[in-house]
Image: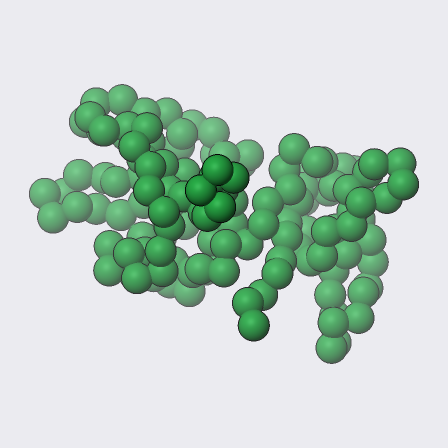
Length: 138
């Protein structure tokens, strides 16, 4: 069974919290942390714009990859290959969009085998590290 996990930045202090996503009647999203056999510890209001779902995949170091994460590796020629992780609703899958180089904007379906074989590592995310989303020619 795959792990369903969300993260979001707390509305009160901007810190990341991880857990289950709940929507209140007022429309405020909450992340509820899990503890001991899945019981809920607390519900924390988060900034809706920062809510991201875990893709079910990990980078070469074992770090969980979420929507909005930025991953990168070096090609055989030594160039940096940097991608933004997102979800494509029309394709129904997580995608990696190339951020730098002549083919910036090109995207494809995210896969665990590709992540490991290419040595991809999470280097940040679009919320904390927007400077990493800048593209351009290499």
